[in-house]
Length: 126
Image 1 (spheres, rainbow, N blue to C red):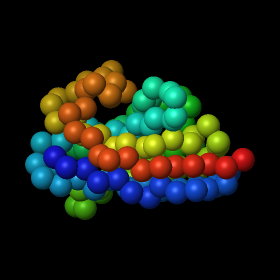
Image 2 (image 1 turned 90 degrees about the vertical axis):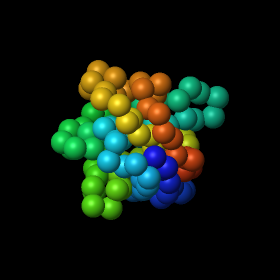
Image 3 (image 1 turned 30 degrees about the vertical axis):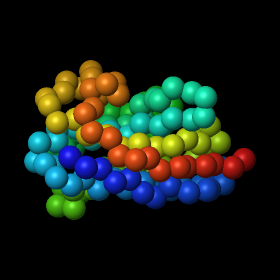
Image 4 (image 1 turned 120 degrees about the horizontal axis):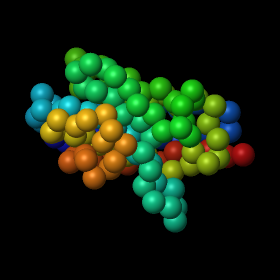
């Protein structure tokens, strides 16, 4: 599975951005798609995940109520709508795909995802 993320950019605090991640290749094997982020000098952290089949979602507490993950199976695309952005949301955002059955308890762990996109930069100015 190959993943291509896009949609990052520079936005003022309180603004919005929508990230997209297009999957290609063996997309029929995808169980869960996730978004992670990594800020300079910090470890990668989980943002949100969605079941490819059921659409069930899971969010990090830091983005709950502000970010929404969704998918369009016909377009093999996962979206991350980010509203009410804060400077602390500044990071490189990565999409990832898990192709083996993954319990919801594992959706937030990056090691559970086998495929990763190249990342897209999100910068939120104060």
